[in-house]
Image (cartoon, rainbow, N blue to C red):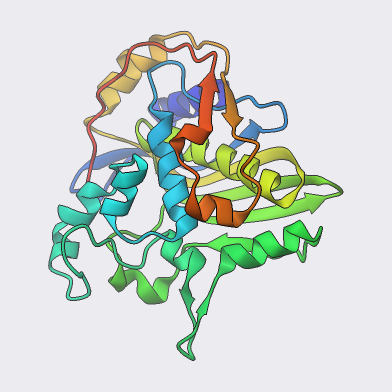
Length: 283
């Protein structure tokens, strides 16, 4: 919580106004932010200075791990975050590659599970990483990336959290995740939850202990219509202690994640929080 609040305060104090072309709004912006999460100690980075809805974040992560490309599939898991980008993004609605209602195109998990190769075949990045880590192997390239510039025109949104790099030291697994752009009031806690949970899940299904997760953000910003709520409400609140995440120990393989795992297999304990804040969302 402290590193999150420090980043928010840094943006308020030091941020520079930048106009975002996609949304048409100004953003108070800083460059380069580093966050760390103690996955080994199960210090779940769920924001306590406002109510945060962790279930949708984990549901979205499950959709990524399954390679979903349709907002309806995410909704079935318990996540509605792709509804707007799939169905209200004007540029995507006019895109000839869009296949109809709820289609997201080749974004995020599609790239992670089915990266198109020049010969027409597809590479499953996640499978390669899981197989190597399960054998205790780290080739210094245990990387899953969603960032494919050659197919930006085939998806509704470029990935914000774009690359996950796993590192194995002895029997402890670490994760470094890279994010090019971050809506700090709304999106960051989603991303924090997902980075933490991704390391916890990958350690569990590959037979390792989780270590620390490192979260690197390039462009961190607060939209102009979010600033007052952040500065005058959320930053005035005192944080509570971190809660803990419980994951069903019966989740043992990537196939489990692909098939039967649901939100019922996750629980958060000891979550104290201040009232929710209705931050505006920019499509």
